Length: 182
Image (cartoon, rainbow, N blue to C red; front, top):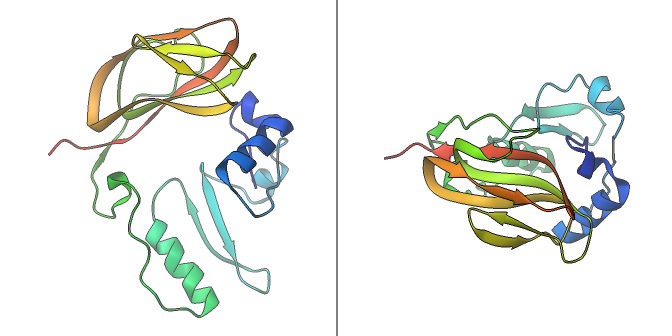
């Protein structure tokens, strides 16, 4: 189920394109009115729910992380014993120490100082040649959705200079937690 946080991801055509681009093979319900969100009293973004074969809620988790716990729950329901996959990113390690990032920017000014591990923008291109500038470098905007702007090895204080042209709409600039400096 996808409950969109931004205008761009509430658009059915954009959501279908994202499902195809990301190679998601299972069905995705677009919950633009947040009906199921409210029905399950979802308390976090993302919310992860796991049901058993009888349709009973077997496990849930709010927010990022706890990926190994989720894998163990899936394996338990399937009656399979195996070690969880290795984390894909250092931030996903169970013992990783993360630092809270700056708050998301949902309105102007989108540029300015921030603290984070990564900076992202939720963009909607209006033409096939749509581009933005990020700290002096050009970035093509080939699809509607989240685009990585800057990545830091550790939680970093930095400055974002974002140039958005008339052929791109920016719904938000979002920041992700970074690893605490060693």
